[in-house]
Image (cartoon, rainbow, N blue to C red; front, side, top):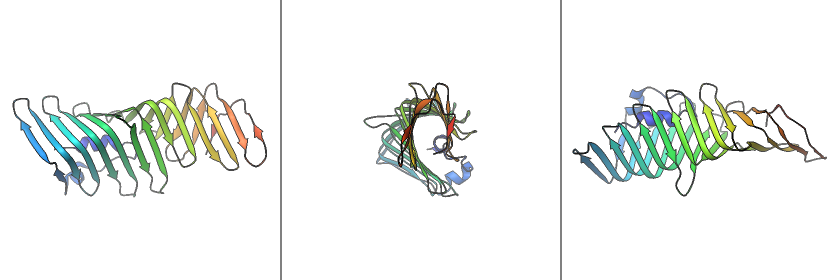
Length: 234
């Protein structure tokens, strides 16, 4: 079982992974049942599927590998954890996960709950995200979030129908269905909407583009309503 490429994709939000030999060293793969279907050229892992080493953890209820299409399918309580030397980490929870080895693309889908992602930086700051569906394209360094996308920090919530993470820039771009950012930065509370919102993962800067509107509330004195805002830093 080679889960290495899938973990590389899911670690994009946190940064580049180490070499493959680091990943494979000391790995332990387990499942309650393993079936080799030679007629259909596939392997099936059933019950408490797990892959662990000091840097990675992957768990699911069931996993299937189709050799002709070089495709992985994982179902049921899928959980993924990737840790880094700088003490940062990225965690993912979803109901279904698909990975195409040739294209280096992973698709995560919701079940009863949405796809959830949690990034904890070296400084301990947390960035949470959720969406109905996520597509990760390793060759392009992109992650696309579709359906009820939410991105949250300790003092800021950003909502949109669609989001895009660009690993080269380290930015999240929110668009579709009038993205809005709601947050607090004492002594102010604010809510700002725009056609497009860009959030910088490391600096936590946020920029608003086109038809910007909203309000800023001075929690100690009075409320003001700006006509537009070019940028804010929560």
